[in-house]
Image (cartoon, rainbow, N blue to C red; front, side):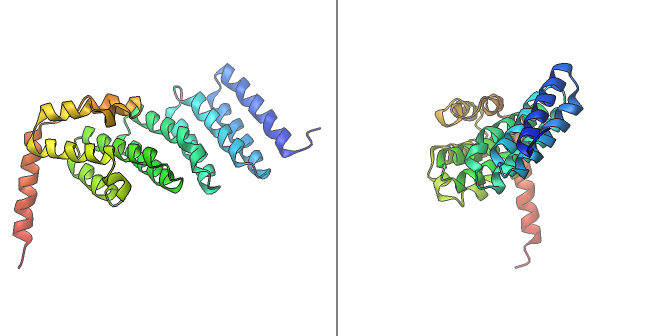
Length: 232
């Protein structure tokens, strides 16, 4: 006889571990999700989140799309309970999985979410690293406009603007605008970037990913369009 949701959750975790050994991936997700719900019934957000994180980790290679959903849900549980600090490893793991899936926009969005969570915990260094990482992903996608918008939004945060990461981002944009490939490559080897997560460092070292001449052409076309729309 199982006497409490806590005991039932532990049994669900054991069943999930067995399903993992057998490679029954749907059951791994189902059992860990059920365990998570039972922990939440006990009012225990940390083990509830941990159960989903274990499922995500188990499914990363076999069913990566489900893994990122699980990481997302695991983060939400901690965010709702004001325990963002405990979710930092989950933000990192989710970002890495998104990059492996080449879902770069999702990865950048998740990094910005991490930045907001870090802000709530006064974890300034983690916040600034998350913002620089998101900018690098947009640059890797050769989406200069989105990278610029991301930088402008992040620069509303004074801590980022005055940080090593903020200064590095500013120098990157200058190098892009000047079409200076060597400077971009040099910045990719600089300390603010080499202290980011490995998955981001690997992307940074491939910059620039597109033709910088195209970038200047796009900017010139935009300016032309703005001139035409100027009715004053």
